[in-house]
Length: 271
DNA sequence: GTCCAGGTTTTTA
DNA sequence: TAAAAACATGGA
Image (cartoon, rainbow, N blue to C red; front, side, top):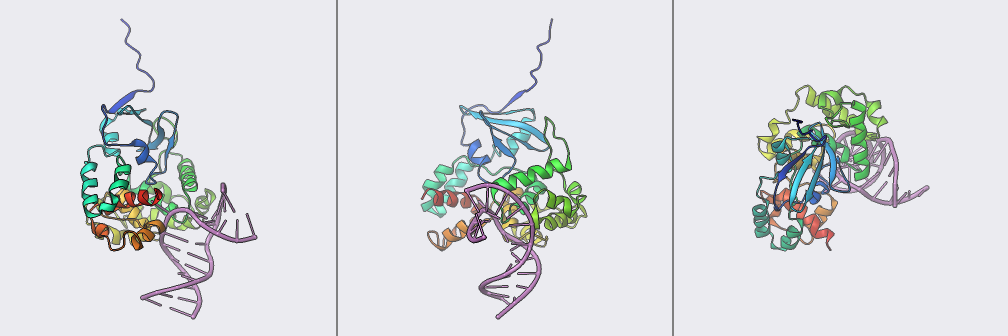
């Protein structure tokens, strides 16, 4: 009897039937930088594993790795987003349509260091360049990912690079920031994982002590890297909206302010 | 050539 | 303290 040959690329089902989640909305929302759209879905690297994610006919799958719970967790498939939307729109009814259109946008559970480092690179920069710099950083450090490509280097590895190497991949004036923060993390000057379990306020204060981390990057880290949903990254568009259409809104004090921020962005874009 | 990009730090009044 | 200016880089 011949054992059936295991296919080279195994497909692991994360979700069998349609649910509220939208893979496309989530991966293109600006919270992550290492996913690329392909003919059938998205390919990219997280946790040092190169995989393909797909959503077809309600079915969500991952190819290239069979750790179902890891990827379910990454895509945050077990959080009740419809109930978050209900709460946000109760606070701010004007966001109802936008929130509906954003339905399916989840906050990924990304690794804290990768998130922090990525958003330091993001400052005063555009998305294609952010993606390119991050890609080069991974290549420069040369830590192979399972299934091909390069893993995002940990803080220790980045700390071993010198400023010139960082400038060489296009970091520009952010190079010293990355060098400084990677060293602080490596030397134990800040414990990123611990910041998940302290208050958003305390975590924010700690992040702001880092060289090159200001209010915007700190809030992005709080929301996208540490799951403090009440953190609201305020770029120029959001600031403007909070001064005009949503002046005086209670959203900024909501425990889902960060998620509401995504809906405000959609609200602006749809106008 | 100028402007700008999911800002932060440094300098200046 | 608050408002400019400086900071690198590359694409439009």
